[in-house]
Image (cartoon, rainbow, N blue to C red; front, side, top):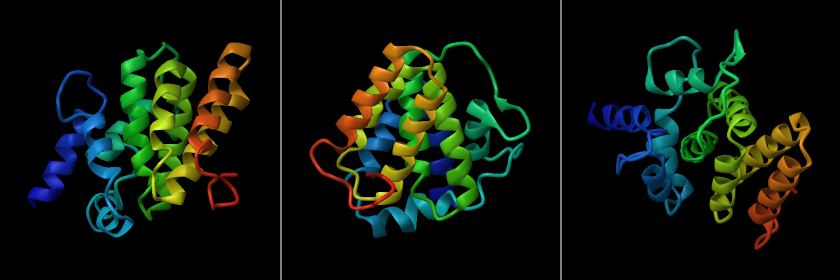
Length: 178
């Protein structure tokens, strides 16, 4: 159907800087939605999309950052703008009820944060007003994952600043995010 094809097309260009309909557009579209509206559109579309090695757009994007059989796919730094866009794309995958997609997206986001900390930490605070506690919880978990793997004090400072900005204006209700 057209909705499924549209979401797939958006994910295929999500991390490409330049196109108007990349992950930044996706973020601006999904952020103001109610949980219900987001669940019946985007979040339900993601269900079943997390099978490693599959050719669907969700799996291809997840495999790009982190593959369950290989782990982190590459060690080269990710350009800041690509990391920022990937943070938006993977961050919104946390809204799906499909645990496999959420788990893979969490690992992918940690991999992105490790290889592109500037873009990752610049995107994280933009989720601060998100109305989905599970999205906030997984983003906070990704921040912890990046911090646990970091050896550079400057990276730790960036991650801590992003975490503080994520919760600065509104202490999360969800206890694990606190």
